Amino acid sequence: MRDEPDPQPAEHYFSASPASADERQPLRVRLDGRELELVTAPSVFSGHRLDLGTAVLLDHVGDPPGEGDLLDLGCGWGPVALTMAMRSPDPTIRRVWAVDVNERARDLTAANAASLGLAGVRTAAPEDVDDDVRFAAIWSNPPIRIGKPALHALLLQWLPRLAPGASAHLVVAKDLGADSLLRWVGEQGAQRDLAGEGGWTAQRSGSRKGYRVLEVSR
Image 1 (cartoon, helix red, strand yellow):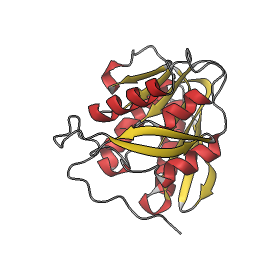
Image 2 (cartoon, helix red, strand yellow):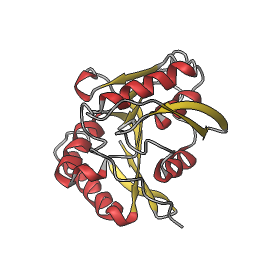
Image 3 (tube, rainbow, N blue to C red):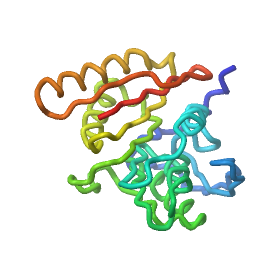
Image 4 (cartoon, helix red, strand yellow):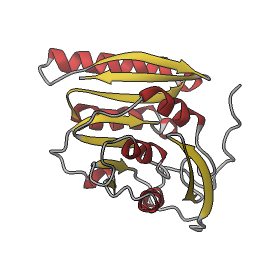
């Protein structure tokens, strides 16, 4: 059974500067086997709970690679970035990039990381990540509702930044186009490979509760 959808927000969670009041609210949540007391606020993705798709992703991916930069693309209030850091050998120095266009989401992630002593988590707007950074892993519950053209542009911006041999894991609801997105990502990777631009392969690596986990490998 799918969980109930979020209440309709007053504005999109992908707004860069939410106009609604930044009313911090406590959030008790279980991440990586730990009961945590975090904070959240309106106008961020899944602002009142852990999204089911994100939970499916985190249950599926296991531990991140032991070395290299990590990326949570579309961090929201931070569940993926926090889990990446907590599963790393030294979460105080491991560099985990928490990227979101929404400045409130970045603020919440930074606050939650600080409360857990995860000093390696770095929040950033997309344009503030250095162009030469390559990622040992990308985990993402991507913002499907921004629309297909914007989503495709987003993925073509970040997937080429996977380090050789690295993988991205994306969770997408089946009824929001997971299978068609998988085909498109695979086609784009094959085209880049033929052009000598460093392509990738794509496969479905998991499926649960109406969600697909897509694995993209360099």
